Image 1 (cartoon, one colour):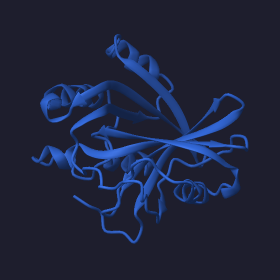
Image 2 (image 1 turned 180 degrees about the vertical axis):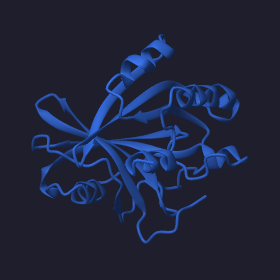
Image 3 (image 1 turned 120 degrees about the vertical axis):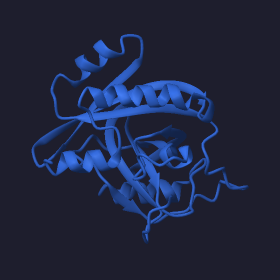
Image 4 (image 1 turned 60 degrees about the horizontal axis):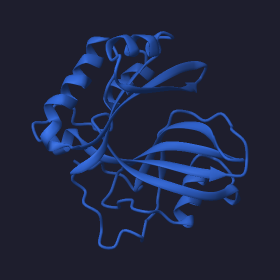
Length: 210
């Protein structure tokens, strides 16, 4: 269930935005060790910025949200749903600088969030759920909207070596994950039928041109 690494977290899929007069950098965090996120600290936020190659002193604030998605797993067909639907996090950093070009990830971080006392559960319960589907097709957003006309959908782009990857996010709201596995699996499978990748191994094959 856990990757073997000297680092505690991997950061994926950065996207830029605005919050008032400040720039926001939002990204996904995947855990590699036994360390979990909770409310976050300034030290941890600065570690995230450093991992992205950004100045640590630009940090102005942060927000962390638990996220459950089948995307961030290496065990895509495991019978144990807890291995297929692992907890990850959505982190938003408010920073002083402007947007800069960042690769899709992953970038690794050594860090510890000491606000999680007692430590949060590592098993998905009632969580913010999201199905992520990725591809290179310029029509990815239109295809997802046609297939899921009533879903809350967002699409953002990340670029690596001139290749644009489009990351679609189908938000499912707050769900008891175990009770809604069939529903979440059906959405994931429908994205696969569209030829999109719905997990990390699939995304790595996409990057490799396989």
